[in-house]
Image (cartoon, rainbow, N blue to C red):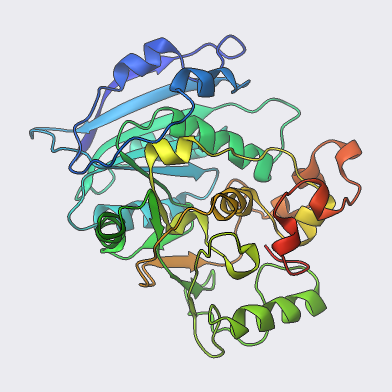
Amino acid sequence: MLRPSGITRVAPGRARGISSATRRWVAAVPTYISLPPWELRTNASTSSSLPYPASSMTIEIRAGTQPRNINVTTIILSRGRTNQLKRALRSLSKQQSVALDLIVVIDDCPETASFLRDTSPPAGAIERIRHLYVERDPREQSGPARVARLRELGLEIASTNWTAFLDDDNELEPGHYSNLLRVILEAKAPAAHSWRSLWSSAGKRHLLTDSHPWCQDREDSRRIFRHYESIGVYKRGSEIVRDQVVPHRRDLSMVDTSEWLFQTNFLRSLEFCKVYTRDDWLYAKAEDSKLLDQIVQSGTPVPSSRQPTLRYFLGGYSNNPSHSGARLADWVGDANQSRSKPLHSEHPAAHHYPQGEI
């Protein structure tokens, strides 16, 4: 049983990012594991780059027990998908050998806020829950730019050495984080990722046949599938995606947001892309793909647990349950950005992509 222990309000239109009052709620939390710190932007500089208000926060702590050392922060973005969110929370509660600080970033959705307020989430591995309600500017739409901003807000208040994202329509196998922590320590790496299994929205295994699931053009979808099949990421008749990171080879690399576990300082040294083009929309190059661009281009060796501990459910979009986030207008926002541009004009490493690569 988890109960609220306090609430902080930040007046809309007045705050940029998270206020100092809100930060005082976030106590320094001891961690199980420590690696040498990475040089990065400070929280203060991150905060000043967030020109949108966080309107409220609730912090909840397990009642009646002495809190354990929390070593992993998990950030979930949610908007109007309470059934899926409940499933994701249940999978987090079953994580083994970790204690979780859960941050739920609510994308201007009273329904989701009410659900979290009125529901007693499963405890288990979840040591603390924080709800961050973020209002939308009237001009903001669903899509990767909005998701990038929300991820930044969640990361701003992370207070552990390790941080992960989980999309609210996905779920984790019980050993997901413990496996990733093990390979991180073995490799002395700043991050690690898992593999994933693909599932339909109806809960059935999605077996790969001849198409890349995240491309709108049928011909390109088949060509991209053949590419990933040739390097062992895809296997026909299997639901397992054997994601990988190959330094300086973006054409050989693919990882989903929910597969990652990052050293928090390393994650804060990366940028969340907020400008997207028609090409990005056509080939589903969202904020997670742009994050991977930076990791691959940096040459940072990143190990994999080589275990499919993420259950990835097809057919949704992080902050738009109707999936209208797939509309071009939601991706590019301003009409002036909607014209297709050469990939190399935005991505220094884009020449590594096969055409249509995400």
